[in-house]
Length: 74
Length: 418
Image (cartoon, rainbow over all chains, first blue to last red; front, side, top):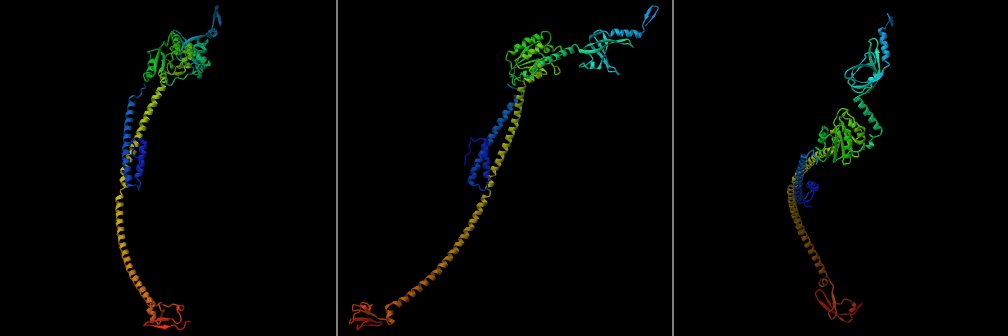
């Protein structure tokens, strides 16, 4: 089983997360395996959400900055 | 004509007739302003009044003459060619126009048109001579009267909006005496200064005001410029010779400014567009991904559903295990009992069997014992050594032998043998 990689990029993490969800929905899932997957999933979810929130804030800031200089070229 | 008392007396008709004859011999050009004109209601000709500061000349002209005049007819200054004539019934004379040309502004306009035609025929307006204005000009020189509306409009729409445009101004006289020579001196200088574009402009005005820009030498000078040149003279309606030879013609100073700033303007617009797209795309990206994550989180919380049946399964497994255990135990017990029963039975059978075998053996044994044999009438012969004689061969005639019976023995002598 793979460990949550802090370095994983958002798309990879999201893909892994969806894989985990799919596995967790499998009816013949082993309990220990399920627990491990759940743990990894929750950690990945947190990672993804943090990354996304950070990116969103940054983009909003950038776009806000862009607007104040509207119509001027230097 | 009649002669009365030595006097030659003419009739009115005769006078007017003679006058008409004389007048009609006079053909000439006359210049004047059309002060009024109206069509004859019955015939295809017009009545016109030509005037100058102090007098009026009544004229008549056919329709094609009036039709050849451009623009507003009343108030136009014209050159008219024709002859004087006299309308005999009224004795009124008039000028019969047979040819007409524009004078004043009209004349200038005609001269301009001719000049435009001439330069056009020389190929000066051809597309192959037109240089492109750089998309992003950095150093631009405006040739105009500094401080004029034209200048202010241009600055407002170029360097004020896009400070990246470095604007230089060559202050020139744009009308009146000296304008032409001024332009002829300044333009070649500006051409050598390495500008990305030259803009020659001035606001609108009368044709006399714009004369310098309709000057042939100025036009040829503009044509010879190596720097890409925009010319904007006057308003939309005016067409000047300078504009025709320019690389790009603009209708007004503002229009010229927009042409110069076009690249930057589109850049800003496309940047704005990109910004908007960036905004909406990122909004879309984030909302979908947040939703996706929320959905995933919901699914993660649902994991317990995957295992919700486990306790139940375990319970039922346990129950089934217990049930099986019971069955197993009771089955084993029965089997054991059966086995024991069987064992007992078999043991009885076995002992009985063995007992019979033993009995039979005993019987056989009894049958085979020498005592029994003797009982049944047999006897045993022994030699003198006491050995059992088993064959006649070991018996010698005359020998003494013992014979044993059931109930005693005897000694006898062998008399004969066969």
